[in-house]
Picture (cartoon, helix red, strand yellow):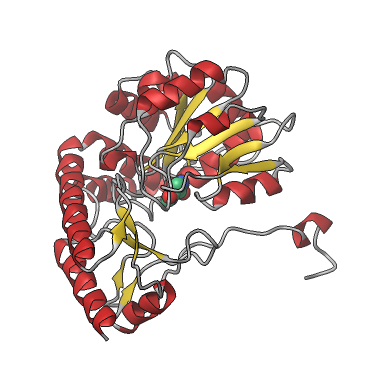
Length: 353
Ligand SMILES: *Cc1c(COP(=O)(O)O)cnc(C)c1O
């Protein structure tokens, strides 16, 4: 606390990211990164961009990247808003497209950045409980709101909603923006991007951090009606005109153009997720049905915190959320086949002890 702070700073409750431990050789299954590097074409493109051209500002509109997204998703470049990670895109979305006429609605168990943005931008929030089965119940979102946001699949549960349910919500909720945060959609769920032409109040947000193995490049994007995108651009250009540097634009464009790499690695993660689920169930865990690159699992013996600490002592890092409805669960990122086997083996030992 400093007397030089603007008074609002003391009242902030910032997001706390998952640990990035400095020790080498840890099996890092706590922040939903990919266990292998990105497409080699991304590295080549970044090498090529690391030139004297860095003396020049980057393209403020990320034109080539918008076009790559448009090609990859079959949409128009005017329907694309890229940003410095989807977290930044989310921040501009809360600022540009949500309003304070009524509370912002999101699930009680979800991505913990949403409450942070609400309080940062002075928006009232109202959480909508997941069902007893940890599912989002879209019927509960039919109430006055200044905007609606949920991830699909949800985090940290991994459970996906069918597209028909999202479309039914859009048919009822026409006066405020509905944001679908698709950080994990590539691992088996249905994307709502196919609906953006028909619903001018739908914004879909994706990231290259997870399925493209590029968490360190910091690139995400929103997709929606050109007027929603223009609103985001106005906010962005009132804040930082060059959020994506030259290396990020080059690498991200190459990533989106390498569909073959993407499909192979995605399939590998989905196969490892299946093996991890079977392994955990064999130990007596209940594993929620995941469409993401992580699983959310609880054991009848409880003791999730102790299991997390036991794993850590064996060099494996997983995430535990110490909140009433989630404290029995571990969230385990799907790693390589060997890493998934190892986590099951160590958990087996801990439970037997
Ligand atoms: C990881 C994640 C993000 C943020 O991704 P970045 O693009 O790395 O900022 C957004 N939403 C959810 C639900 C996530 O899990």
